[in-house]
Image 1 (spheres, one colour):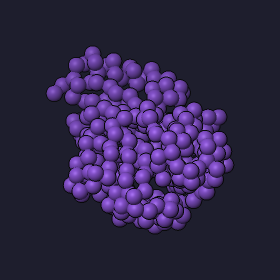
Image 2 (cartoon, rainbow, N blue to C red):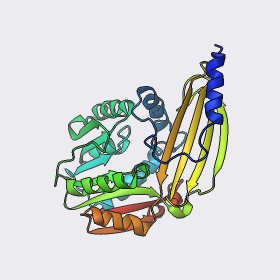
Image 3 (cartoon, rainbow, N blue to C red):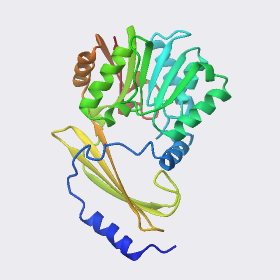
Image 4 (cartoon, helix red, strand yellow):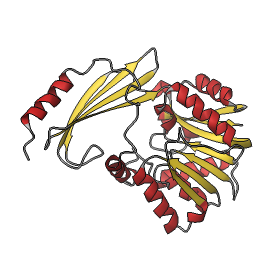
Length: 290
């Protein structure tokens, strides 16, 4: 298929005339998780055991779950809120350990898969999967024994949204309940501007030939990374642009934000408390107690 030359030319001019410094969060600052086609392609990556870039491989996830079960003081029948749960891999495993899960995500393919997984493991009565933006989720107060916000997902929201989410979760936890948050270690964050490109015909950006142009921009004052992706679909000339913002938090700042949200104590665990994970050194886990 040959693309419309005019549309192809317009796409190239849009790329050429793109602003050198895009405004952070101008396009929401997140991947299009709720787009059905993108969600289906991302689910494929979540389930791919050849890498841990979307969801961690099964053996590493079990190591994390063992540690979380202990540090969160979980017991059978504990009620857990899993924010941005993806395809339910953590939620269903926790249900199999005896917990009850409320899990929220706005990726339709991920939620559909999570529901099927729970049913296949006979855990459907222990797992409530909700397809909704976690920012819109009306969390009931004093309900949960623990909550999870894993794999850096809290950092894709603006600082104001992050503060609001933490306040919502603190309110939803029972007194003494604990929240586990996994964020990138700011000392390990790549703060160099960079560009890259590649072509492919299968991946999260599409299942037909495309050209991917990527840019990484560090904003020192805001302490955030913005990645801008231009995806040119070669069979049609259609151009998609996605901007992903990743807010950095040093541990002292995150602890202060958590306490302001209503948590009484916060402990930090660099490198996943030295668990044997392939990327453990990139992360800090925060355990916040209400």
